Length: 119
Image 1 (cartoon, rainbow, N blue to C red):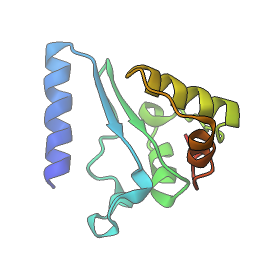
Image 2 (cartoon, rainbow, N blue to C red):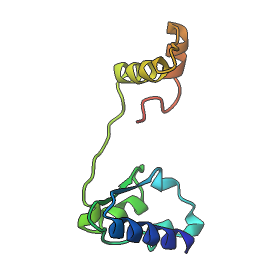
Image 3 (cartoon, one colour):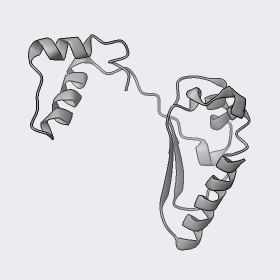
Image 4 (cartoon, one colour):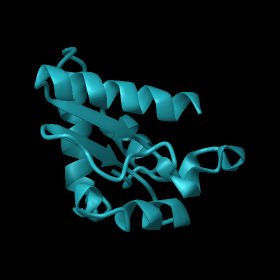
């Protein structure tokens, strides 16, 4: 597949150059099932030095397969939901970069949204 070829080329070039490579795959659980993500043929079973794959996912069969891949993918970090104070802090910090802020009603409305506690 095109994805498999791209991943192999990226890893090869990074390895030859001695470069650090971080391949980030967000929402692995949302990959299109027609692409057969659970077989993970596009993801190598081992990585060159200084190359890492970071994957985010809700629990799913594909994530279980990633964790079974071996030492290259053996580290797992479960992230709990964010507390209200953590959510407020993140929102305030992000907005402050642009010298913006929300009033109390706006902050309450934002934090009341479904999945607002999800990292």
